[in-house]
Amino acid sequence: MQRVIGRYSQDIDGPLLVAIGAMHGNEPAGVNAIRTVFEMLENEKIIKPEFEFKGTFLGLIGNLKAFEQKRRFIDKDLNRSWDYSVYQTIKDLPSDQLNAEQEEMLDIIAALRAEIEAHSPKEIIVLDLHTTSAHGGIFSITSEDDMSIRMAIELHAPVIMGMLDNISGSSIHFFDGENMGISTTAIAFESGQHEDPQSVNRAIAAIINCMRTLGCVNAHDVENKHDEMLINFSKNLPKVNRLIGKYSIRNSGHFEMLPGFQSFDRVQEGQLLAHDGDEAVYCRQDAMILMPFYQKMGEDGFFLIVEEERGALNS
View 1 (cartoon, rainbow, N blue to C red):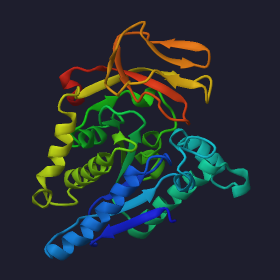
View 2 (view 1 turned 90 degrees about the vertical axis):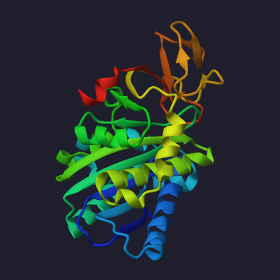
View 3 (view 1 turned 135 degrees about the horizontal axis):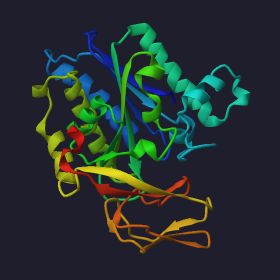
């Protein structure tokens, strides 16, 4: 299996849109969505010869080794490993001195560097596609820069702000202009639960909406069903939210959420949420729960969010 899922370009100037699936190896929906979008692009040109695509679409598998083994990660969560200082330390080390995820990180960066050197794009947008172990909704995670927020708005899903202040080493932390040497924006999109077949369709819709927002495709070439799918699924969810806390698992392998929680469920101060080994875990304040942990591997038990003022994205 190869890391590069595909590359599509008509050699017309435009941005480089990079979609990454399976940054966590147990999340196949993003990879399946990327594969489908490549098929759609090829078919569109056959059906409609005048179809134009501006820029380049590049699809990558994130944690290739873990994806092949259907595991979240091998040695360390890849989406907690994107640290530029670590990259500078390990980039010239031999492979026998790297852990599995460090090798993955270097290989992803090498693929992007090769694309940049070969085709000199003026702008890069990284769309990191994820799913969650719990049901309950779709959402996007942004940095605080204007372009990331603009992309999130066009995905018609709740936006989670402040996430980067509470986790470290995510793809959004790493992929920016300073680290890549070219204008770069990153956004993460959570398309639903791991095994839900609709998670693939929602990830497809997110990719296509990004293409439209960036001007890669003309709006009249995009079917309304993509917007409708995302809008309908998230219509009853709060649009703008801010992360106010998370629970870090202390007893790896012995953390157990109480059954039945879904993302965006409202929880109350003092409510029992989980057991971490022998310790009962209670909610510290009234909030909504996000990404409650119902899988074997990971370090974040759950996140807590509150709804932001409606104008927060435009402030």
